[in-house]
Amino acid sequence: MAKRLAILGASGHGKVVADLAGQLGYEVTFYDDAYPLKKSIEHWTVAGTFSDLLSREHKNLEVVVAIGNNKIRKEKSVALWRHNFSLATLIHPCASVSKFANVEAGTVVFAGAVINAFATIGEGCIINSAAVIEHDTVVGNYSHICPNTALAGNVNIGECCWVGIGSQVIQLISVGDNTLIGAGSTVVKNLPENVTAIGSPAVVVKSES
Image 1: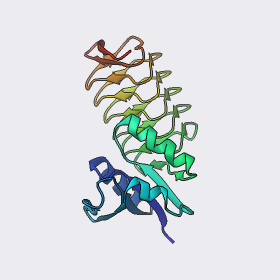
Image 2: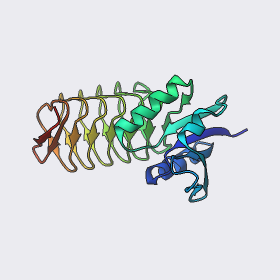
Image 3: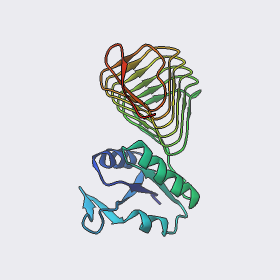
């Protein structure tokens, strides 16, 4: 019997998650609040809204929240936890994850990603294609590490952070919660929470605090 997976979020990101899930042997059904206007995405069925999913019998059903916005992904994941759903952890066959690393529930690790020894990846994260997470680095819950990003050893990324495509964070750096690092940036100094930093070296250009 095929494993069953509900994917919340029928978007481009959702399609990539569904493709990965299929490779891992899951039978996929989407849920999206655009239903019933959206009843399918490519060849996959959209079966209902988020409320419909919450009302489903969830025995033997795993869920992944395939929503790029970190705060919304957190909100939906927490609601699913409260309704006793099981959030799946999906790791692409072509990712390299050390047996000494820890990857929490609800996280998706895409092709070509590397997670090295004693790294810790929190709940509901996106570790995107070809991202590198070096030894002893911590990525907080619901953060998105974008494609071709490199986090050196002993980096600490806070909760709900966004590390943009092609960015680099040097060793021993800490990044506060809810901080956005722009594409192609190089982070060489600690960053506080609730800021946007861009450039090489990265500088804070916006603060929400």
